[in-house]
Length: 492
Image 1 (tube, rainbow, N blue to C red):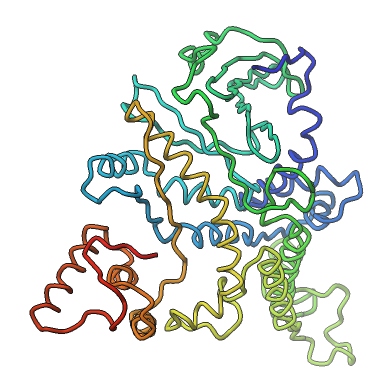
Image 2: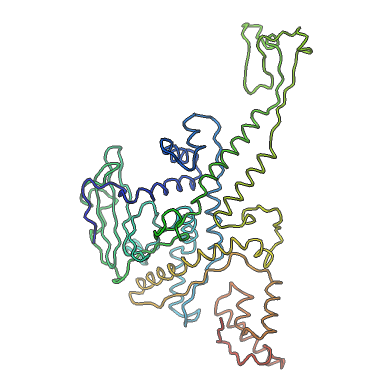
């Protein structure tokens, strides 16, 4: 049921303040916007903080040079790519490629742009410690259920034994500075509640009719869902455990623990650019050389390559020659090494190999298969850990969508999240030869390994051709003792 909020209820609720403070900072780093980062970190300047000193001090001291390196966004993008740049394989166990239910599933996936949605969701999850995916449907708009992303910093989830049992999503409909209208949508087992509240920046306030705004007037206060015994939402953590909030079901952001290093990286790059600015070549001459004859006023421009030196006597013996050339040293190697070290540390803390971000020096564009797997092993392991959280959740959601779409119970699909590193043909051929010699795989399995993007129909058709050719030529398609194989056999 919907919680009984009081009119003076703080929003977000006080018990969520610590995690929402983290959300605010992670969101700023993810945005890559210097102003957002400055505002998020300068808010902490009045209290001791473990990180963010550079950006907070930049605002406080009003220094002009503020350079941001968007390493946070690159972390999130890379995390998503490792998970879903290779399209997951989705099948319905026991059904063939041309079965009507399989065709309907493919159509539903295309209608929802399913693979693009999960790619986007995985990137946000990396940054914000996790993501909510929910199933919506409105037959007046679409004749099929729709999969939506719900942001974690606009959600209040409830977990029991680590499992999501209810969640309240909220968004601001109107904020005029004094009055704030918030729309709350609570998902519970078999039911969705919708309410509108009029309050302030810090308080939820009182409930008002949903008809108050065009954006909310079409929502029903209570809607029963087609899935009676489940909640139509899944929370997918980026990684667990959460090192900051141990025991919480909230995931761990890839930025968690990296905030100080990212702040230091921006400070280092900013100092590097400042070194370049101060290291511009200058020619110093006496003031008399720069005096404007028409007005009698000395001329000075910071971007000019000629400076004037006050009270400088061109006839002074110590300043013989009258003109001085000044060129300060730019410490580029020191800055570059420091930046590389910081980036490598940030990447490693997030669970990835430096080679995944173009660091390490030995990665070649020709690397593939086993060689690439070795170099990016840490990244592959981290991605595999994350994939475990996604597999079950996506299967749950897709089952719900198919059940709603067909208006009846539906078989549970199987989703295989493919590896980021795709082996080249020479590596695959070598592997297949070893399996064949060991009599450890069927024709079906070997054809599938050699053609990962093929459909079940294509694989089975190829198996049939191989068997037919073997009969015509009188050869054995498999090593002796591997057993009888038919075109419908599936191993693995």
